[in-house]
Image 1: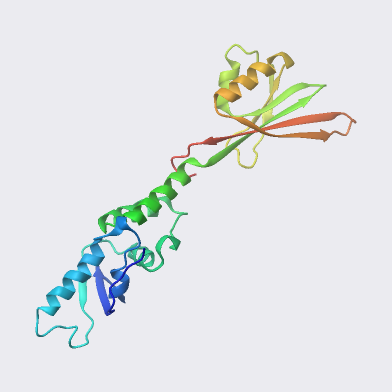
Image 2: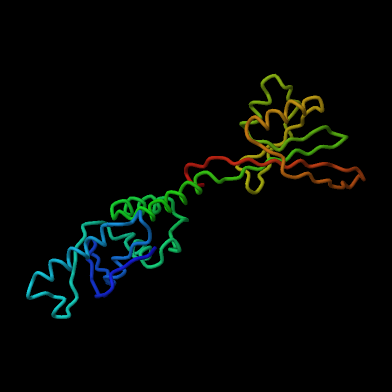
Length: 229
């Protein structure tokens, strides 16, 4: 429900020493009920009311009024672009620190819909990290588990680790080691994976050079990444 004032004047705003020029209709735009009475709309309304009360109004002389806001100007262009484009605004989602700063600015200007959008994007950025895990199953060497240290620790608590074959880095996995697991431990291992949030998403049957086949079980879970890495 975008609303703005019917007549539009060019207005220059000094935000922390940097001057931005825009229209009064942009500053008065209200995209949702949550944004009613936001700071910039009230600033324009109060300015117009004070000018109407003056016989020497700068608006009557067709000059551009200059308003001052004592805020950091770094992210003000995003505030203006939100007023222009609503939820379609392009935000610095690649920079968690900038998003947090912009969230504080949105709260200051009482643009609550923008603040909600930023909060949602920051939450997604923190929590939607996928961790993958692969179990290689073959009939010659037993079961091989590509696993991180958290699961290795839980499995080693009385589960009978056989040996370590080395470390291997894989895409989308922060740490990955291969552990040789006895057949008799697979059931307990799968129970551990389920308890800590892994779900089976794929099975792959691969042919090896010696003519034998190997099954790969692919698991995935969502992990919380508070630093956005």
